[in-house]
Image 1 (tube, rainbow, N blue to C red):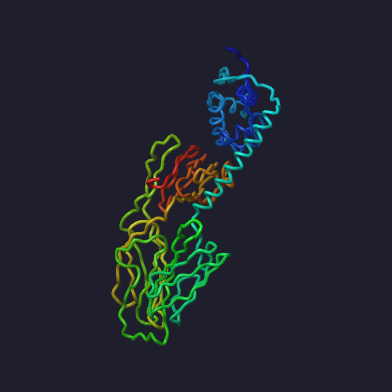
Image 2 (image 1 turned 90 degrees about the vertical axis):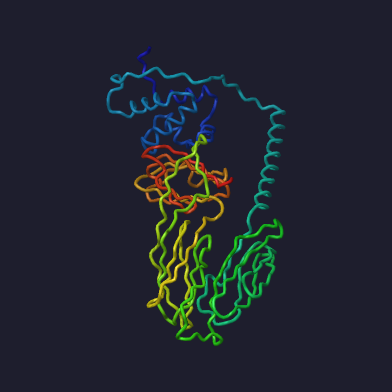
Length: 428
């Protein structure tokens, strides 16, 4: 047993050099920023984000170097304490799991050839990956005009303009006549469609001729009011959308007819919590027991029928089963039971509250560079989206509230707890 007190930085640097790695490599393999690793080895603790995160760094770094994390944390506490060092007995530093002698790096013609071949192979693989991503990408479809639903259109035709993939074929459906149009080389398109008096719901989808993939469906509701439509003051209340038992993704369209200028209130109550369309496991693959928070109903929405008696609106509802009640002022309410589904893929919203947290995130295996390795401040909101999977690592789980595919899960863990979750699409 020796009475020598080892400095934390010396212990870390000696173990790293014995392992034969430099700080940039340690950063890549531990996800700890190089500036924090350097500060630990230099003893510049003022450059570190705080003792909670420093202890987390020491645990990860110690495990990587084959050192006892608790010994490293004791050294850190000793060096940052105001008490004299000789009053605190310290255990002898553990040896690294393995050591190896460093060898001088010699540049030979073989090394140069190997490096050139490696760069060529890497460039070819990167090009293949770029081509594959472009081929597998879902084409864009963005409707510019009309920008949203139209509640009082005065013509029996309407012109739709938008942007999609170059030369994509755009198809209109759900109308009496469903034309198609081909976008130009820049992706812009324009098509005029025929309408009927009353409510018209049209859906548009674009197919990329290169990949053969379809875009997401864009939908618009157009309510036609003109001299051909002369609603009677005695018109009865009717709810056109949504249909009873409908299953929808995203915002819910509410439309129908009532007495001209009549006020209409739309309210929703949840009848069944959503079923998760994803799975959550820990870094070791163990399933995470989730606590699903019930959806919160929005405030009632007020609409007003126009001069023809038509009314329309959009209601934002999270996933789950809902009962809608549409009540025109002075008339009997109309109820509809609907189910709101989550969109395809996996989406997560991280809300930092009551503190700050170290974050690392991946979307389908790709690191999200603009947030990974940084400290997210109190009040920050981080949006993540992947086709198949997300990896989320937080350094202060008690300050991170998470929502996945519109379903509120709650706090990820306890204060100062390091938590890593892998979220995968159901069946993925």
